[in-house]
Image 1 (cartoon, rainbow over the protein chains, first blue to last red):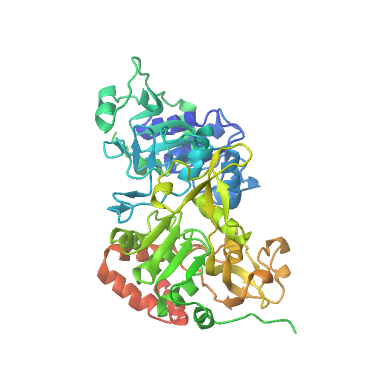
Image 2: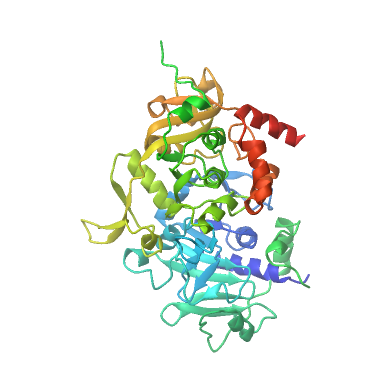
Length: 249
Length: 282
């Protein structure tokens, strides 16, 4: 079997969840969700995952089959905030903008009083980033996403995570359609951790609208194994992941 | 003789006033008191401050010019991420906002419900939420000296929530997966309204009594509004009407479609609305 870019991204998300034993993983988006399911089905069986509503799944089940799944617990929204405050959670959120310090914007573009583009609102991003491990999923890596400074810091980056806001701050990974980034550059700036198979470092740098620290040795994101590809196909038989990462062959 | 708190939608709207701060229960496009929202839409109420885990309640009232200010953590239709009419109102500069983190919003309701002026939280620290809400203050930990956000109580003049079942005395029950924050909205409010799918004599026969999370000390009036959360979800009674929601969302960028939507679904009585959606579904 040969892996598509979407499959590589699923595995990169799964790898971000590898340490998350007995941790509530909240993946926003199809590819991150498949990554969580894959991790739960393989190397991280102790990961906790909800059905997207209020129940914890006892086992990884295909997209759309959540209602029939065996449940191991109940986690309504109010209890999610309890988990946020307890810190036993890893969220992978989307981001309309991310800046060089890892600040994330999902609120609005332009002047907040009268934005050019109203987005979702801060949602849980301020509290998530102040309380527990946070990663981002960017299916459209480009210079309009990676910017010098976000218009609005919904999720806080390394420069804003001071005092109590920095006590539990932990930005683990930024998985994109081209690469895996982190905040491992000098002074907590964006760094390149790996490029996906077939993507060059130059392509990633060109698609990043802010400084990107490039180490001397940039590995290639690992390819899915055959077993992993079979699981991804089982969890997403309809190919919903290709709506996020088109399969251009 | 026990007090009967049953009322009509007109009674409910009659208890609201222009300029009020109104909390609306549910979450996104889930179990929203849409029959009451439609009743407000038909009324001459205006200048409202809407406090909501926002969905189409916020969008519809913004589109009709009823809203001065929205207090929110997000506004979304869930299966359609962005609420088109809220978006249009924001981009036109037509509404003021107080944007908080979702957990801060919870804390604000919880503070009000507990009659506390504020509650400390780590959520919001360092984020732009602090910058766009210049009234927000921080508070020093009196024991260890750390600095936290002092989330102010979100006091409400009125709150409206839609539950699956209620009784005439004002007890109410959710039958779906999540109460959301409905009891806190009611506890944070001066005038407290529950709309419901069905008013029954004995809630204990409808499901586990532990699901009666709203008791009559928290409710002033109960209105039976069958299918009253439409087009948002109200499981297990019904799922979200995704086709209708798509039709609604499409009116955000098409003035003619919005006029037609208004004509067909908003400038009509609740009975006419329910008839119109049954006809549309056939």
